[in-house]
Image (cartoon, rainbow, N blue to C red):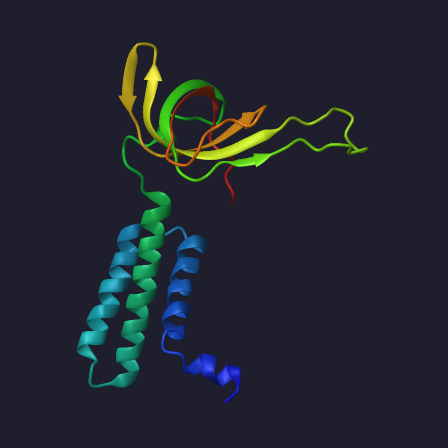
Length: 178
C-alpha cells in the first residue's frame, strides 16, 4: 500500500481536515461566535435526523466538526476576560508597573560581536513572557490578567520559569496582523 493510500485511510485525517477548514473559515470571515455555534448545532441536528441516509449524516457530522473547531478558534482568539491587560494598554506606549510570573524559560540573545555591518554595537537582550497578576498604580493595586512579552536590554538577568517579577517599563499593544 502506498503512503498516499495509507494517509487517506487514516481515521483522523478527515477530522483534522474539517477542523482546519473551520479554523481557516473563522480566520477569513468576520462571523461572530453564535453563528459558529449555530452551524455546529445545525450539523448535529442534521446528523441525528439523517442517520439512515449516510450521505446526509456524514455532511451533518462534517458541519458539526467544522463548526466546533471554528467556535473554539473564535472564542480563543477574540473573547477575553473583562480584566485583561489588553483593555488597559493602548497603541501608544505607556509607562506601567506590573507584577506577574515568568511562564517559560527566558531566552537570552548576546550582542553580535565583530559584525562589520553594525556601526553601533547592539546590546544583549533577554526575552520572556509574563503571566500578569496585578497593575501597580501609585499606592493602588488592580487585579489584571493576560500575558505580556517582556524584553530586557542589558546583562543576562538571573530569572527562571515560575519566578515572580515586578517590572516597570513601557508597554503597548503589538501591531495587528491582517
